[in-house]
Length: 278
Image 1 (spheres, helix red, strand yellow):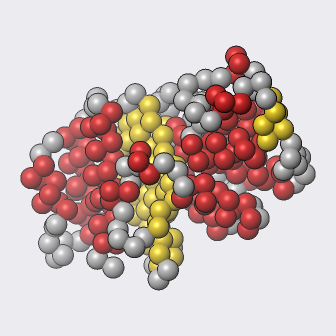
Image 2 (image 1 turned 180 degrees about the horizontal axis):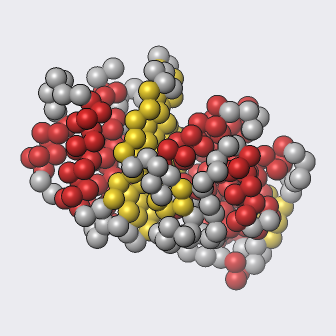
């Protein structure tokens, strides 16, 4: 990548229109990495919305787990399950990247604990068992429709691939969904706070957004990765500023794991640089 060019883009003259320069910068990143990048940003303080390929479809990967957990918390609130409902996971149900559930095979575990594992740790088996208990992937589609989302479709268990025929949506839609989870009326206050806490406490060592986070801002995020795709859905806020909701979805690159992570951080830096000045 042309580091000098990217550094120049990060310090563009204030005389340039922010949105126009941001679009140009992301287009250059796409060209440099042979990727397709989708970004959606909604600042609820100013009610300004900006997107780049915001209405194009991308794999949503692990960012869907937020809504799998939201659907379960909603089901508990509706007394479909109780907070103390337990399930037992069979060895054959264990899939890749299940750091929490690995230690609970064959033992009773609460559905709420599985939600924590999925939303906080990104545990694939936990998310799959939640979907199983809710009625399969279609149950998550039903939940999406209940919060006004008509375009996201969930067809796969985790880990998902990057096929657009699988678990996919649009950046603008996912940003709206996250807003509706945190600020809508589908979930009760306690459940909204719980999801926010899980997303705030996710592993910061693996975060590609933290290096781009403006000083004195809080971050709640959920991420996902496949062989040629990355996904990040997050919100930032501070005491003097209402939440800013952001979705970054990247597909079709041929990069190493480290390089694709750096690409994601660069996109986040471009998107969030405006808030460094506040």
